[in-house]
Length: 628
Image (cartoon, rainbow, N blue to C red):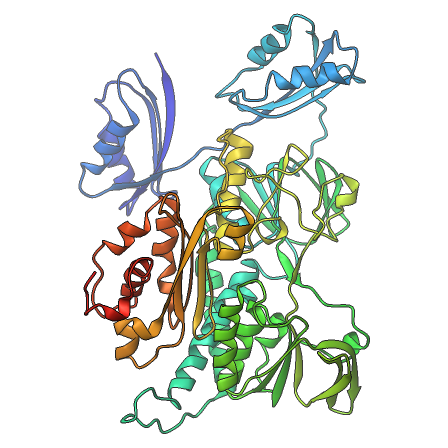
């Protein structure tokens, strides 16, 4: 007999009689040991002999009623156990490490801690996968070390013990919580700072893209690409714009975050600031202690405020405070020309706010090649945005209602700018690690202050993981979500999953949009990969010609030895919609010849990919429409 238990979520029940009816379907079923159907809980638990009936047959029996349906299997909490053994035979720390290596890839081992000075070892394990006796046998099998005795567990009566503690409340944290629930982990999520949902939904991706789209609508109401179409202007209710943005944020924060976990049985969520007391314990708000077998740090990042004289006295804004400002400022000066500063600049300028950007490097979006920066600078200046590259702020001073910005000019001289509205800081981000008490546990950080992780999201401390913007990985909401899932899988299932960013797609939501995947020509050359670049101006793409909007280009980078696509950059209106295809081509080793030889619908922007691929060997200006 192979006895198993399954718990199923069942829809369609409207009363206790329904539950009784489902139970009767199993009265004559061979192999059913016990059954308990609950109308109020909308679930059913079955204990059965797997040699006589399968889980799939139980589900099929319920679904065959026609009135009730199994929605999903409900994961029972993994009952992780801990055992502590006294171990004889160890003579040094190397002995402890040797014993630890015996358990390195043993399925079911969650944590292990072997101590030579204490002559003991503590193991947390999943009893469904490995038993206490099997752990004991593994130690004894070394031939040098033996389990002398089992040390009784200490009884402290604490309810603040968890399988997993997640510090943070953004995309990585929620993805981790979803994965933890699916495998039945007893989980605590501790979130301080921004509301649950983190940067993306509250103060990042969602509000910024919403404002960008509203600003784009205003722009097209006053600008036309066609002589026969004459726009008559736009009336912008700025306060309503911000109110609508706030409503969208509130709706998505509820639907895509809070509602998703609302029925989780094994997740507790609290607000507060977590700090490590030791490697197994955190203190929340300096009062409540919680312990766990494993930890995931997913605290995100925040604006990196530069140390410039007078800055803290002028009442500057960041994206967090700017996006909630219902009174439209007369003007803004944005410090920084990275993607955050550029998206803010284009949105607010189009919403009627006079905009200036001060950037201490020689061009906007300095992480990309100069041709991308130049294309974007040309568009921004044509819209009236004042760009000041190679200007370095030296001092800020409040003078009445105005802010004076003292700058060093490109030629070494000094000047000052008067800002009558607001100063917005967009000078990059920094990882949120300073208040975590990492100095108490010896967690390694990179030179930039991010938590150092490997491809499995592991830190230098075996049971502590990190994911999202706080880690030294690409800072995108979708990578954070993937990392949170991988971290929990690796921590508790031994899946050994790794992240791969070699074909990672990304988009800057300016107009034209900037999108990329894989390497650019600078990165390719630095890796000594033989490469060739094809750059197709949009003036050769029929869709752009028909739309009378030929801003931008499509650039492909191929490995000349294999013909495989290894990188792509797109500068185009809605260029972000092209990048996923190019990312997939890089990921799966598609050749440039295969891109050129594929079918593309005529008069789509996607046809530009085909033309850019053809450009490696032909002059597309000499081809007829759709010809190869």
